[in-house]
Length: 450
Image (cartoon, rainbow, N blue to C red; front, side):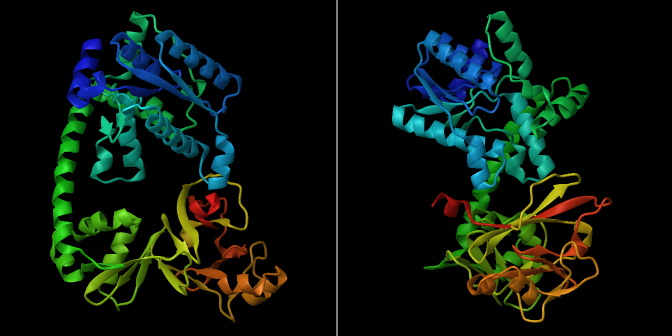
């Protein structure tokens, strides 16, 4: 394995022998083996460890173990102990996602401040394959089929040449000790479900699964590079940039092959979701003036051009058309979000978030400011109707908030939600609901930080 490790780093990061590397070490077998290889080869390195405290005494034991490992290797040791649960709650994201963002942000801070050239993580071929399968399950483009890249900016993965079995064998042959994370044995996380239930089936079909995947990943990565180079050249020929607008000529776009993917190549950098692309193309055959929104930009379907403009901090848009779920956009300066969830999802809900039955929805939905005469069926009051104006009075909504209050309408005109106040009874989940759509209105994360 040592020779393979040397070959791999010589191919991808030949200057690793001259420039120091910050090793991300959890205490698990993968990162400890990576540390062992660096130390054995005499490569300059430091060790960074994140203690999120999520497993109580086990987390404290992990930190103590990694600290001792750094001392044995004579590597500088860095540790951080953020309150990840509080940060996740504040940002309205999962603890797992918050931990990942905190980890990589802190690694880069240590790297830049302490004079390290690289950040090394211990991802291997199995991790890369699991990433591909997760991307497929969630929906992805060509880039998502390439797995984990060996080098991404200052981030390197020097164990990608190996697989889990090879790492375990190396640890056994060299007496390497590590800490076992018991959560790896559960199916609580999507990655673990793939690792325990999907990979074994694929390995039965192809015993050399990781080797085959590595070769395929290399070819896919090369193909994606060529595709991106072609699209970048095409974008410079077709897209025009003004002082505060971006223009895409509709005629040239529609006369090109695969216009949906070409448009996606332009809009994804501006925060638009792929699910919006078909709606935009369909709108080209309608009356000009329809608008689509990303968290940062608004797209106007004009007669001859798609015109994009950056949104201001506060939106004064009177009406938005929502062509499908799994979108996020700006509404009155806040983040409006529709997310598809599986059946049985359990969430803590408040006035800013509701769950609705997707089978009751008829797209496109309309989000607009409430109007005099709007009527709906308040949640919990089956068969009883109420004026939105009366609801706002009953809830003591002040005039400023009342002017901003929106209503979300189904395709047939029924009110789904008086936004941030009360949901409609007709769209609630039932025992036969096959899934759910979560709809929420929350401040943007940057605003929370302020």
